[in-house]
Amino acid sequence: MTETQRAVTKAVIPAAGLGTRFLPATKAMPKEMLPIVDKPAIQYVVEEAASAGLGDVLIITGRNKDNLVNHFDSVPELEYSLERKGDEGKLGKVHESSELAEVYFLRQGQPLGLGHAVGRARGHVGYESFAVLLGDDLIDARDPLLDRMIAEHDSRGATVIALMEVPQESIHLYGCAAVEATDDADVVRITGLVEKPAAAEAPSNLAVIGRYVLRPEIFDILDELPPGRGGEIQLTDALHQLAEGKGEAPVYGVIFRGRRYDTGDRADWIKANVLLGVDHDELGGEITDWVIGFADQLRARREG
Ligand code: G1P
Image: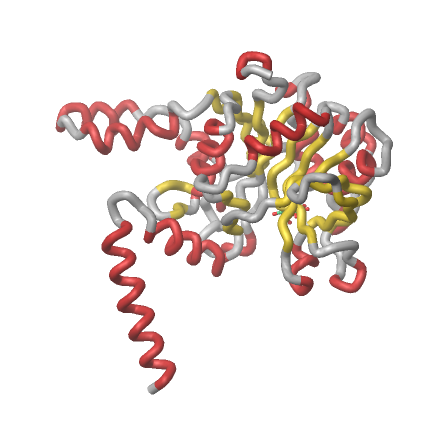
């Protein structure tokens, strides 16, 4: 399939969560605007969509999201002032986020769950397959995942979700997949899904991470779906129905073995800043030297 024939061109990014894990930082600011090094988390996600060839991005927002919308717009007064100073470098940084993709916004309306947020995209997406990228999951750009998922969707004609092996004690934080092997070690056929199971009830150690390539049949299922875990309409439950054969096509999982950061979790957010900081073009050298020196100090403190 050539680039112009690709079936998947749109990305949907649900960003209507309340961000309670990050209070008080998220009291008046959406969690998606928390910076990782020098860019808000949501910009990395839009960059990921754009670099997978998805030039049409719909962000589903909630209340309190005005500065998220502003981030993808131009800022004439700031641009004018940087132009006058001839500061091309900073001007480039201002332009970056507004030139990545065509970014559209839609309010979720009621906070009824991830499945509901995705269902709201129906009018924008139409009868096409599309990708969903969750803002809390940051996939390191050096370990591309979405391209591979889109290729599997195109060749198998199937719904494709991303999975990652996690320790048993963490599985209750994720959707969890029951799977069958295929002849590709990185691809499994999904036979069932359960949202945030207790470790003892988890069908595997394969967690759903926040990347999905969905066929439009998901919308009819979401429309009919009763609330699930936590009283919310769960995307995982809709995918379970497809995995059980209630749709026209099966569900496959691509097992991701690269670097992923859960930026909605405070400790992981700090780690992501350090990990991306040491590899940053301008700051990497300074941060690396500091981290090494600081690690020595910590070790001495622990031993002394
Ligand atoms: C959501 C999904 C869950 C998935 C997770 C990945 O949960 O419902 O199935 O494993 O994202 O980050 P949330 O973390 O929004 O509660």
